[in-house]
Length: 303
Image (cartoon, helix red, strand yellow):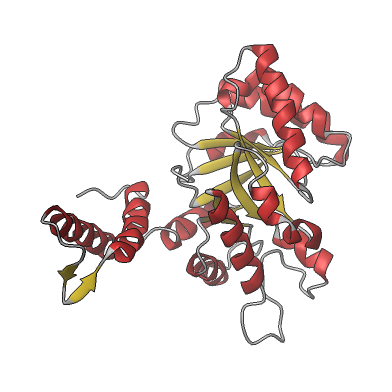
């Protein structure tokens, strides 16, 4: 869970201009999409374009991911083999959509291992991100999260999930009318618990109403409040907002660092707890403060 994924920016694999622009964005992760963002008759050309982009582009310190097609399509194995054989050393992870069983992850792990062995790549370095997009996947998300040492994230797919469950909404990532609370509270909580039990991250999907900054901020804040680590962005204008929501405020980060320092001082003197700004703090406080401190460091804060 050490790599920050506050913003995971989606880039259509068939659009060279979008791929080139993505490099300049302040997103923590960029994923080149071979699935929903690519028309069926463009799959082969998009696969080639993504591979060439991986080979020719300097993505800096961003996490670089390719979303392949689902394991129930004829494109899945072609995507993995073509991209990883030629550009596996430029790839940090593959994202598998519509994961419904641990077997989807296990199959991906085994195929990646075979490709790595055949091409002299470091075995196990390429991670897996698994998208949970329907009821079947959600029911077994704990097993999916733990299905492979390569697993790095569970990713929620709000569009396909809403369609599969029957939620009456047509904007991906938006909330329907008629419910007094947050309709995805259970989903978010289940995914976060499954991810944390497996030692990986949980990422929210996109908010498709581009230009609705307040709507995006509201959905991102809900996800952050329930413990998710980041959110997809689908337009450059969304990146700054999502980065802001999933980063602690500087004052909050400074307080967490000061709390950690007070706890270390007390611990060094043999005390099991310390007093910080009138509050008794112990090991549980240390763990909470460490989470905020790590998030702040990932956001670029420095003492």
